[in-house]
Image (cartoon, rainbow, N blue to C red):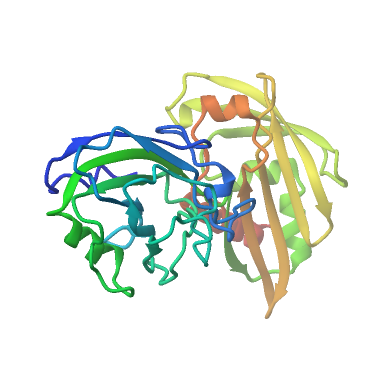
Length: 331
């Protein structure tokens, strides 16, 4: 979320009050006000009611703007002009593609999707929270006089010298990014040879790129549910003073020659439930090995304690390089 203030260089005006039945200042937008392209989104314009407009108000305009959109100019979601001064409320869904809930005389400009209607919030996945400024503008003219195909920016420019007051309600929305990273590398060895390293507890220690895995105890795993113990030394990372400790590796997926995955159970409950894994696929005269790390099922208690992901793409790449070297040496 940027610090960009969309009102910073606009003329100062009086303020009045606007409220939304489903919107709380500074809180997340409800699903109804999200884009229908997102799960649960409905592209419904919010219910709005306002009061306390300055004396002399002859009409209103309503805009919804996201200054945090990665466009260089933000994104206009809705713009309504020429709302009569006697109107102080818009019902939810007034901004459909026909403007069915708008009062007589009011009309919708094309938004930045070039649709004359309300388009719900849809920030890019992983871009962080966006702010949505819902603004009622009190104007000193009955009609703002812009063309029907004008952009909301043109409306804003034209309104600048006619605004008597401004009522602002700000809400937020965020689309979580993917909770999984993966990288691939070609290893010039059969899938069976690669899988043998990955299914051996000692192999886990051999390919570790962090330097934390000191040793392991247990037989090579043969099925999901198998476990083995790994001796850890956190000193290698120098981030948390945990010293030496043991964890149990629990195999969650085991398909010989194709895929192996596991999670880690340590001393602290509940367990984090992040998953590490490898997929293998024959490729030319060797194997395409994909290493992945998935934290989508991480326990909420752990999300409060730790910033995920705890493994970076570069760490996955390093481990694949060591895996390649280890497989070559064991053949």
